Image (cartoon, rainbow, N blue to C red; front, side, top):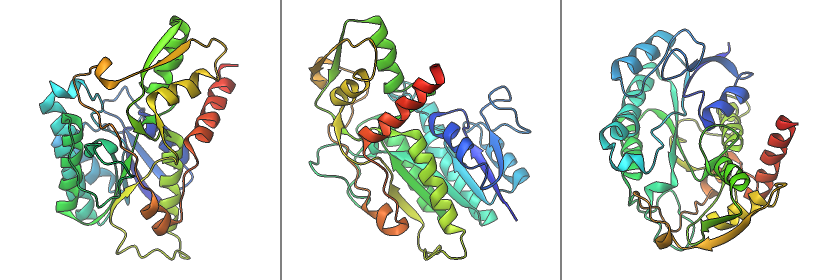
Length: 304
């Protein structure tokens, strides 16, 4: 019997790619924040606990994919209450409902749970110390899920970009058309990760967990996993790689974080180790530069 899958946030960067990837895996119920976001029988607002509970109890999913979050990092510094409700409180409610149904909850988190003071790739067991409201609320969401327990996967990713929504890739492409020179921060290090790679890896994990041939012990896999592309880059290097593929190529200049102050503090180094993911599921995402080439090829095809 096909799995019943509840996908929360189908219009976001990761959610849109999940909607495309997971269709062949089961019966998908995609619920947006309001009825106009996604044609579906129901809508789910993570800021409304009653909405969360009623939809889950109606759909009775085998798998819940939570691809929705409050992701406006700088705005969260002043819109603290809303960020906390969506990122910290809602995941706990999702976990409670998933546990009651014996369902699997897949929740996405972020490299911003770390302070960036480390100089080698962060393991899942390393000390968390978020330095922004966004990071703190995302960490609280992780902790809420862990406190409930049950079957869950928390997938921490980083520097997510794609062909939809608001992200660094689309911003650089737009600015490149408008300006002759771009000044980009060069002293923050991480791994750009294409949203499609996150979605495809998620579906591969689901397939493994539900395969009769699986060697994965489903009783012991609950926990946190880092899920990013491989390699590392600064925002400056990421921007240069994007611009190099454009017809119009403005000059790209490196600047420091101090020269580009933002309301929210970002971790200076947030490289994530994917060893646990590789050991548990045998999955390794491609190098970020190769993934970017694939993504840009998709954009080129879409525009021509």
